[in-house]
Picture: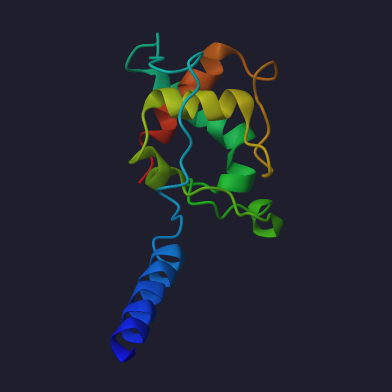
Length: 133
């Protein structure tokens, strides 16, 4: 009888540990790029980041901060806080960044810039984000 109880306790403990462990981290929470945007690449040249600096300063810096760390003055009041763009950019492709800037992100203050910025400006911003450290 004691062996059965011990076995039951061990199995129950294993199930509880499995259910509680391995929660979603920021890296795991990165969504899959929809087919419409998957594999998208910039049609712009190497100078796109230079123009992207102005696009970023004008439209993104207030929330994401001057270096894209999510520490801009408008971002301080946001929940969830704006993404740290250099960290995000290290984990995703240009297609992800292009998609997110275009469509925004539900449940956050990240707005859809499609229709506000041109495709060229969005790609310029993506190129500039890639330069942030």
